[in-house]
Amino acid sequence: MDLSTTYMGLTLRSPLVPSASPLSREIGDIKRMEDAGAGAVVLYSLFEEEVLYEQRELQQALTAGSESFAESLTYFPEPHQLFIGPETYLDHIQKATDAVEIPIIASLNCSSLGSWTDYARKMEQAGADAIELNVYWIPTDADLPSDAVEQTYVDIVKAVASGVEIPVAVKLSPYFTNVANMAKRLSQAGADALVLFNRFYQPDIDLESLEVRPNVLLSTAQAMRLPMRWVAILYKTVEADLAATSGIHTAEDALKMLMAGANVTMMASALLHNGVGHLKTVEQNMVQWMEQHEYESIEELRGSMSQMNCDNPSAFERAQYMRALKTYKV
Figure 1 (cartoon, one colour):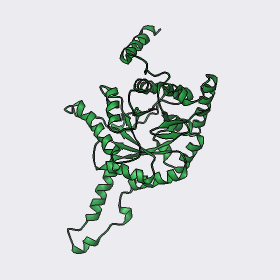
Figure 2 (figure 1 turned 90 degrees about the vertical axis):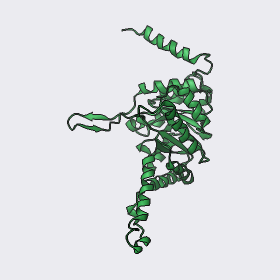
Figure 3 (figure 1 turned 180 degrees about the horizontal axis):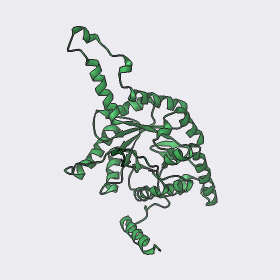
Figure 4 (figure 1 turned 90 degrees about the horizontal axis):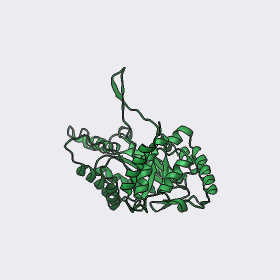
């Protein structure tokens, strides 16, 4: 049974890819994911704010006291006084790539265009096989037009893709007026893959303390419906590869995404809930289903349930919407 697939020009032994999560913080866990069958691993995210914070802290430290005494011009702060988060991330990339044979995909979480984009080159130099741009931005300015929002995404992708030789994926949200158009523009801007979709984590309100608190809810299988539809719509309509994420918990979920047209299927919540060994269970169940249905490879089934041969995908989606409402029984 051939479970191999290609993603951004990388050959993966399996389409099962753990997405960015705390599970990739320890090298031992990354090795366990490889042993369980992962085709690649997306590391936990480095945030734009962490890179910018380091830059500001370093500048302040290098100039501290220089305006007071001449002797201060030779002052250099002790290493522990500097913020070293980004450097630690680069070290983690290098250790991960040395420890495993599967591709390691670094993750940059960002919301704006800026000097932080230069850090992508450092990730490449540290040994990352690819970079995933997680664009997490919720525009709240009522005077900001939608075309400006879209252009920001395009500019970020252009800046990063033009600065590195390794492939770049973009993890984007589904909240665009025309997702298909954005997918095409991002592909043209240099994105080698599109990761569908980013999940926004809405905070909660604590009624006792009257404070806003973070509230991370793990995904359920229901969440896979949205990315599955768009993977099916975008398959073969954009040059970029497609990664499906959110709500993928079982072999059945992964198979559906692959048949819709995904190159890889990403999961985090299922692994956080069931443990890294869940990857092996998913792979074994995939093989069993493929044997029963006489598929010999992932490539043979990929895209078989996409909308590639549908003359009018919009009309098809409208028809499915009507069918669902008309046939529902109380």
